[in-house]
Image 1 (tube, rainbow, N blue to C red):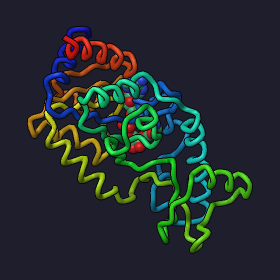
Image 2: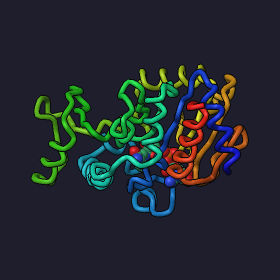
Image 3: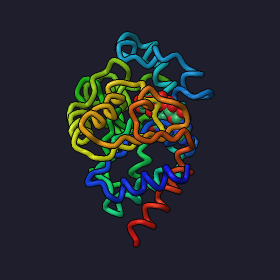
Length: 257
Ligand code: NAD
């Protein structure tokens, strides 16, 4: 593994634009379960309960959604950035990072020190809530307090529309600006590094393919195999925290020379 990490570090030092692409696997070492690993969210819940159409369909399904969303939000609020988040923030401080494209909704990249302008949140954020009718935004913690007191689905103070966390559910439209920007950055970079994603959720999973087809080197750091492993230049089936710590060590050695 050592040689491959040295080579990735060399590529980071030489690249003009490095894009980091992250998924739920980046945050498991912070205590936030991913979706598809054993013990992950899909071991506990039915993915269909997260479908946007179901949220719109009935009060009962909205209540079920809010219960699941609350259970996922609690560990996110307590979580701290881990070594891999810190390494990515360090890349930005060193001027080596074009952007982070993340599927995560936990805000840990920004809490680790990445500037919000550098982080493209493809699947939204769990830190705020919006009315699906008038689009008014609400602080997530305030809504969670209300939910705890009233034990019912929260509705908008303004117009009475249903409130939903600002995360993208299955079947819900992707954010236009973020998706477009993520494709543009993926097409234009010369090094694309995936960390902690199963690469099965579309359209996010097409971004490494876009990068590779446009001539970028592709690196995948993920504990389990992904459908894109065959097209990658380097694949490491390892824990993100340990790999990113060694990688940053090598990058610093090269750039300090
Ligand atoms: P996923 O659950 O499909 O895949 C996670 C991958 O990470 C797995 O392949 C696993 O092998 C790998 N992994 C787990 N721990 C790892 C570690 N310590 N080091 C390296 N690899 C590790 O997640 P995904 O690909 O991000 O896609 C699913 C969706 O999950 C996304 O839409 C995202 O919004 C949502 N999600 C986000 C969070 C979060 O914000 N932290 C948590 C759960 C789910």
